[in-house]
Length: 106
Image (cartoon, rainbow, N blue to C red; front, side, top):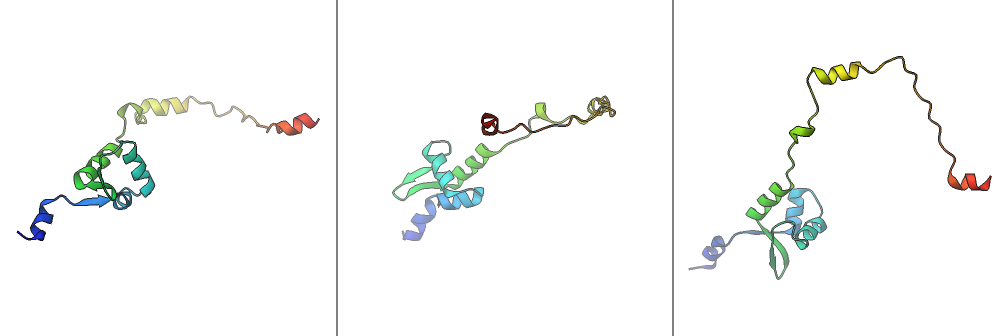
């Protein structure tokens, strides 16, 4: 058995820099998440290493899906609500307050 066969049986691992590149984030962030045990990883003599299954799980952890409860309304009730706002109400003129240090000097 040669060394090529042995290496093909082992799962390929990726560095934190490669994972950061795939996630479009910093290497520091990947290492920090691994250090805090928020993402799966392997610890080796050279630091944090990640297998393909780890990276796939990280993508699932970071995935966000739309929340149907907070989806904007697209039916007639939302347009009716907008129509109830009177158009003849004058706009309120806003004035900035004087800074505190300017008030103390007076």
